Structure formats: structure tokens, C-alpha cells
Image (cartoon, rainbow, N blue to C red; front, side):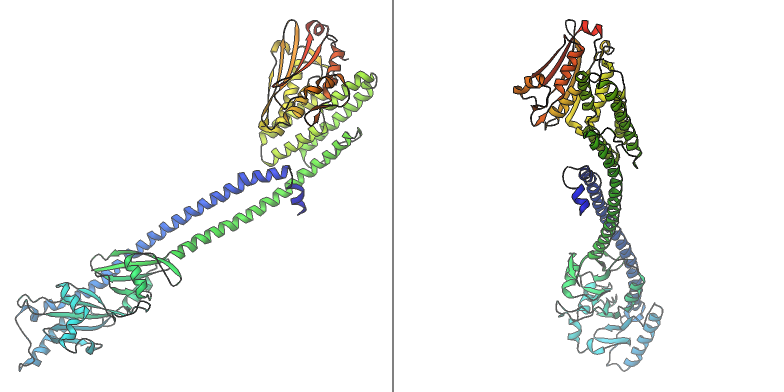
Length: 594
């Protein structure tokens, strides 16, 4: 909680970096993970559909093979002499039993030639003109024959006549089963009308009552991969077989091809006709199982993602403490410098880049101390102005802000900007440490460019700059660091308070034997009522909206010490324009504040 309060409240670097982490890493990763999960779900569903379709083809092939064997049995009577002649078997005949035994013996021989399976076939009956001619095994004779009227009303009987010589499949169950009761699919009928070409009016049927245990055994050998079951219907849509107990209501949904809820799951079905039989094979599969696979993938990805987030936060916290600890050590030194303790030195810290900056700062402190002792004490008024000017160039706040910008660049991986910033700061410090009291305009402009580059790291797009210095003026000698307070004043008191992007322009030009140096910005502007007070007083005065500017009087006084005939003016219109005018003759005499 203390870490959150210290670093995630207010306008802190850690808070901004965390927001960058959310925007650049966390949210995109969540989005990408979501899209991948959607793609996984789509691919998984497509694969499931493909696997189910493969299973459907296997089942249809088995149904064709199994029912083909049964179809062979139903064609056996066509090879019997009875159904290709005008023979009749009349119970009133004296030779009735002899004819019946002969019929049964010949039919038994024909049946034996087929793939007759006693384990699957519960009843096998051959019926002709109201007589039971062949019944080697029969489970319940009473349900077939009580009288001819009962027979003709049986669904399988009617269905066989409608088949007109083709094998037909009919359910073997009570048609009055309620919607909520489980449908019985333990057996079904295969019937076929036997055509006698010599007696077209003869009604003959072969009737097989077949147990579905053969289906059950085979379905166990087929891996359906998903939570699914097989439903087989005839050409009328009547249920012949189901590998799972289902109610009539569920069967109605399956037959209609609708998605439905059953046994606590959502189901859908894929259907197709058998290749050689009048049967429709439907595979009913659970949509919830597919969704469960997708959820498992999402939960797994979410778990891995949480682990990654925790590791990232731990590393973020560790690296941040490592950098902030080093920055705090340097900040302590800068605080002592602000209090006037020139004996303070930057300690050695864990971050090598900060050590190099601290070493440069220590050199600056030593040089400043020497300069104060050796030069500025000799001429109090003149040298105090120079000291104030120099001090304004290396304000600890500027260095602190720059260091925190470096921290931010390091944490977000902006290596190029960080390297460029280090080089700019090194050149800036080297320029400040130079003992020479004068320099040329070109070097001063290069120094200002480095200064503005470092300020751009802080302000970003809110700050832009232009430096216009023709080559013919770059060698002109002027007092060192005389322009920096003007640029710093424009940035800190003009551009920083503004909420809009601003530009700072520096222009060197010659007009009527006068060298003009212009520093202009389009920031918040001066308070016009205080302009004269700023230029005429050497004390801290209110000059900008909610800010103070003490560098302008010092620059003006230092300029007059070097160039007595020069002028220093400020114009406040749409922009703030500070103009230095130096007669060319004084430049040739090389007046400086030596």
C-alpha cells in the first residue's frame, strides 16, 4: 500500500510508466489473447465438425454393411420355388404337412446360405396369404397373429406393402409413448414384400425382428471424440435406433435438426442418408463440451497471463527501486547545492549512467567553487552577476528533471533518445565547465540547442524550437552563457505554463551595422505592466503569470558591461520577443566581461 501511495498517486514517473504499460502492453495483450481464443474456438468447432463428419461416414458405412447382410436374408425367398410358381399350400389339403415341411426345408437351406445371425435376429417369419409358412425362431407369436385383421393393422405390415418389394425398416415400440418417456429402441423390424410373378395378387412377406445390440457393440468401437450419440431413422423419420436413451420430445428436436437442451446440455445434430439403405444417420453432439474446451483454453491463457503480469510487476517494482534509489541519492546532493553547500558531492550509486552524470556534476561543483574563489570575489558586482547567470544555467531542478526524463526513457526502452540525451547533457556540462569568459556565437547556439533538446525530453510535443544562425556570424565573439537565461526564461515562464504547443525561436541577423540577437516565444506572455520593472530592478520581481523571472536584469546589466552602446528590449504582442542589439564597432573591439 505504501508503494502504491508513494508512486501511483500524483503526477509521478512511475504512474505515467504504469499507464504506458497498460496502454502498450496489458490492453493489447488482452485483446490479442481474446482474438486468439476466438480463433481457437472457431478452429476447434471446425475440427469438431470435421471429426463428427468423419464419424458419420464411418457409421453410415457400417450401417450399409450391416443392413446389406440383412437385405441378403430378405432376398432369400426369391430363390424359393414356391414364390416362382403357382403352387399353394392349403391347410385343407391331404398333403399339407408334407408341402409345409418341404417348403421349410428348402427355405432353411436358402437361409443357411446367407449371413444369418441368430444373436441379432430375434424373430424370422415368412408369411403368405394368411399362413405362417416359416418360423425357425419366434419370440412372441401372439404379437404377430391373433387374426388377420390384427396383422394388417400392424405398422410394419403396412410399411412393407408400401415398400413394394424393397426392404423397409419400422420401429418396434408402442406408438402411444408419452413425450417425457424414454423411447424403446431395443429392436426394430425389417420387412419385405415378396413378389410372385406368376401370382401377382399373392401377399407374401418376410418379417425380421432385429435386436439393436449389434449396433451397440459396433458403436462402442467407434470413437466419436466428443460427447455425442448416434440416432438412426427410417425414410419416414421414425426412430429405429439411438445409442443413448432419449425422450420423444428430444427426438422431435433431433428430427427437425434444431438445437435443443437435453440432460443439462445444449445439443446440435449432423445428419446424412446412408448410401445404400433407406436410413438417415444423425450424430447428435454436445455444444457445451466444445464450449468447455474453449473455456479451458481461456482459463489456461488467463492463468499464464496473470503469472506474466505478476512477474512483470515484480521486475517493474525492483528496477524502479533500483533507479529511484540512485536518483534520490543525486537529488540529495542537488538539495544541498540549492542550500548553498558547495562542499556537497554526488555519491557513487548503482546505476552507471547516473555515476557518469554525478561525476560531471561533481566536476561542475569543483569548477564553480574555484571560479567563485578565484574570480567572482575580485569584482563583487560584476562577478556576482556572472555567478547568478552561471547558476541559472545549471539549476538543480533542471538537472533533476533531466535525470527523471532519463529514468523514464530507460524504463520504456527508448535507447536512442536516452543516448542522445546523455550526449546532449555531457556537451552542456562540458560547455558550462569551460573557464573561458567569452565564446563565439556558433558555440553558444550549439549549447542552446543541447539545452532545448533536454527540455524537449520533458515537455515533448509542447516544445519546439528553431535556431537561425548564418555561418558568417558563427565566429563572432560574445560573453559566454549570455543567451541561456533568455532561452530558459522563455521555456520556464512562457512555454511551461501554456497548455498549447509552443515554439522558441533564436535568430541572429545584421541590420544597419548592428548585430541583432532575437529570442522569441509564443507562450503565455509577459504582464505588460511589469516589463519596465523587470528591466530596471535587480531583485526578484513578478513578471509572468504565476512565475518569477530574475535572469532578465542580469543579462541586461552583463550586456551593458560588455557593450556599453548595446540595447536590450522586450516586445509583448502575440509573441514575447526579446531583442539584443550590439553595434558592429563594439563587436570588432571585442568588449567582454573579462
